[in-house]
Image (cartoon, rainbow, N blue to C red; front, side, top):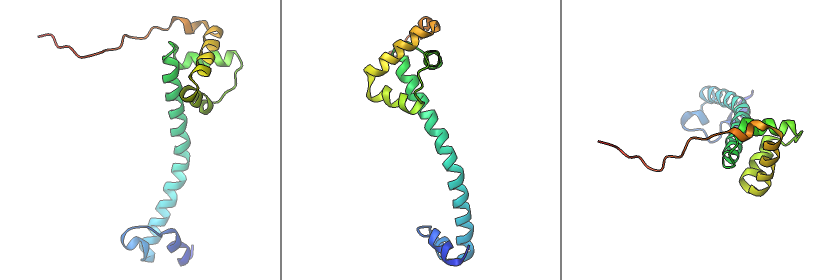
Length: 125
């Protein structure tokens, strides 16, 4: 890359990384490596966030995430995880209908037992 392009990409960097060509070139190359890597990591992070949101929504209705997704697969309901997470957050009644459909399609959904919630910590001495 030529000098002008390096300095244009290095705009906003701290110290000599913005105006000394040798240091700017190193910092710009590293920044481009980070941006390449993190474009892929962002997809991974978003998918895991969607799964956490769906899991939280399904557990409110007594179904685990895996059983819920298996029930949707058996019913041939093809909604992706992004849409399902949005439904679980913003459309609870629609999501409840999907959970009911899923639990009817897969009988394993009915036997899920969750541990009791701990209200407070009590110490016996």
